[in-house]
Structure formats: structure tokens, C-alpha cells
Image (cartoon, rainbow, N blue to C red):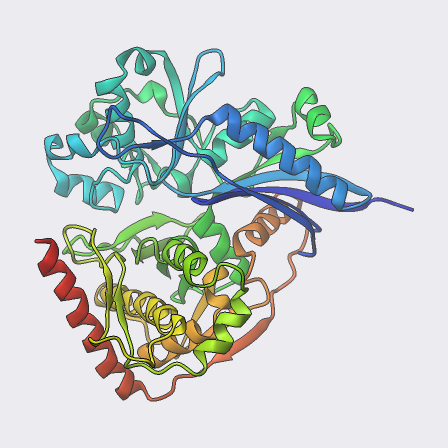
Length: 482
């Protein structure tokens, strides 16, 4: 029997590492996942790190398992996608010195020292904060000068994976957009931004386009993974951009990517910025388009963790069934989501319900309020995007694991007054975006994804009133913190 042609897709999210074996037609033959292991660094107030060598061993192990479970396949190409803002630094010998995920804020102490923040926003498309890579590098320089002096390059996590496979150093444009060192409009590294952070141009890898062939896979790595040395390594990109690609949206479409965090994205064909500096502008993975973004923060992570508390032994289908019998008035939540016009994130949150505790209050009431909090946070950020760039379409695309919840999709449709559309690629959107990228590189025609389901708005005016109640609850928690 002839082997089936397939791609190996590595996807490193904030929470877990995934490796999938997928055909060029988008059929997922197998997918394996494990949690990414993080450690704290006591030398900073708010720092999270990972051991790159340990993550690499996880990737190798997951790849072998996925390939075994996929049957007889011939891997034609390998690519990777990853959480944005996460980076790995390497030395001259190619040794991986330190991994810093997107949730690492080791540079927060030095945010106040940055001069000309307006210029940074104008060039980089985002207001500077410790979320982004340049501040992570500053944090390393200030606390670990010896390690910093050994650094030859830094790369996004997905570019680092491709480097490990091919031996070729690069930085893909959508990932470079997250560094604060990249001129988004000009599509190039910025000497002016480097100067503001006191960083050398020598640490910047060459820029490469997503969907281009980086090189062949190294023979030792091919043997380690158990795949042909004829396989090529394809440049991937940021997980949000690859997820968007798998949805095949049109220019000016709006897309909600509901994962660990929830970016709300509009695809635009020119460099648009917010005069109030509330939104981000990044390069898309194609050659010409940009993405305009507001982000509701760790919404999906909140849901996942609270699901483990309230429904530790049940699946999401059980939750959806119980939510059918839950009403709106029992509980309101505010759980630390991000709103684009707030200077500081909400670091305290909780639930508000009537006292004494009603007999009608159930675990479903709490999860219901979590989903409502997520929907309202997305809606709030959506309105800021519309202030910058008008969205006239009657629908919004959505993808990611979060929108498996029909209740969340209905909440969003009711708030937005627009239908929420999902395609048949929505569950594993970033992985399937990797298939599109590999097909582009190898000249294989992509299959257009199909519309799977459309959720239409109901009772929009009533939900606007409930939205105002949520805003008051969020204001309450902000006052408690201050």
C-alpha cells in the first residue's frame, strides 16, 4: 500500500504543545498534546520561563507518537506555529539558552525607562509593554548580563523550532510584529526602535515570508523524528494569523479567535492605527495585508481552569446541557479580561450573586456567568476596533476551541447584533492554517473550508441591558482593587 502524503505541524500555545499529522486536504490523521512546563524566576517580580531543551524533547516525543498513530505516511513538509510574543535566545554554538513565553513579564520594571512611547506605537503598531519581546530582552540584559552577552540571536518560538529542524535562522513577519523592534508598515527591522531599547541589530535574524521554504530538514533531525530527509521545512507564523488563514476570510472581515486568549481581528489592506493607541496593528502572513487587533486576554484559560473546578469529571457537552436550564439573573462574573482602553489589567475578579445564597444558584450559574463575561469582554473590544475601522458586514467569523460552546456563540450573536459563523476548520484552526502554509510552499491547491454553522442574534436589546449590568460589576471590582 502506498504511503499517504502528509505534513507535520507543530503548534506551541500558551497552555500546551501540540503536534499533528495532517494530509494536504486537511484531514487530521493524528494529534498529540502535552502541557508546556513553566517555571518562575525569583529574580523578577513577574517572570515565567521554560527550558527550550525540555520543550524540544516534548516536540520530538509528541511527533513520534503522532507519526506512529497515523499509519503509513510520507511527510513532505514540516512547519510550526506558536504563541505570539514568546521567544527563545541562542548562542553562537546554536545552544538554546532561555525560553520566555508570552506570559513572561520580566521587563515590567523597565517599562517606565522607555523614551518616546508614541514613536514606538507609530512604528511597531502597539503600545509598548512588558508583554512584548524587546522588554523580555531588556530584563535579561539587566539581571543576567553574562547570559545576555552570550546571545547571538533571538527568535519567536515557531522560528526557533524551524531553526532546530533546518539549521537556518530566520524571523517570520507576523511574529516579528510582536517584538517592538519591527517597523510594521515598512515590513522591516527598525534601527530607531533598536536604539530606544539599546539593543544591537546583530541579534536580529533575517526576515522571511510565511509559506516560503526555509530549507531541507537536517539529516540527524530527520532520523530522530523518523521522517524522510527529503522533507522540507516551511516558514509558519503566529498562531493567530495561521488560525485566521484556515478560515479563508475576505479583506475587511472580522474574526474572533477564541483560544487561551481571545484576539478580535479585522483584516485590513493598509496600515491603520488608533489615535488613542488602544489597538494593535500587525503583519498578516500574506504579503500585503495587515491585521488590526484588540485582545480580551486570558478568557479561554479562565474558562478551562474554572471548568476543572466546577466540572472536573464531565465534558463540555454536559456543561452545555446544564446551561440550557440556567437563567441570566443568578450570577455575574468579572474575571480579569482585558479591555483596550484600560491602562491596567483587572487583577482581581470574582462573582456577584444575591445574598443569602439562593437555592436556584447552581454550578451552571457560575459557568454561565463565565461565558457571559467572555462574550462581554469580546464585545467591548470589538467596539474599539470599530472606532478605528468601520465594520459593515452582517456577520463575524469565529474559530478556536472556545467557540465549541454554542452558548458562547449565541451570547456573542445577541450582543453584536450580527451572526456568528464558523467553518469546518474552526476546532484546530492554527494547525490547519499550517496545512495551508505548507500547500502554498509546495504549490498544492488548498481546499476551501466550508461554512459549518451560523448563529443568528436573538433579543439584542435585552442583551444590551444585561451587558450594562456586567459593566457595572466590572466597575465594582476595579473600585475594590483601587
